[in-house]
Length: 80
Image: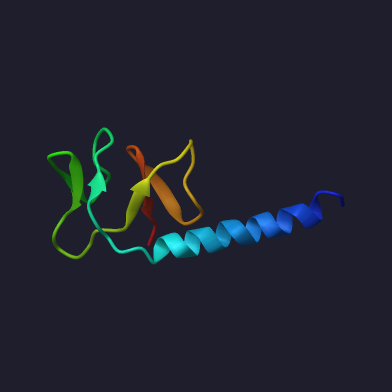
C-alpha cells in the first residue's frame, strides 16, 4: 500500500502529458536518423507528407513512447 499513493499522481501526470502532446500541431521535425512514417526528408528536417493523413510526431526520449504513441525510427508517432 505504500507505493499506491505515489503511483496515482504519476499515472495522472503521464496521461496529462500524453494529452498535451496530442494537441500539438503537425510540423517539420529536426532529422534524427531516418524520418518517421508519414514524413519525408528535406535537408536536415523531416517534413509532414501532404495528403492530410500524417500523424503528429515527436522526438523519442529514452526507449519508450508515451501512452497512445508508437515508435517509428527515432520518433514517437501518435496512434489513431
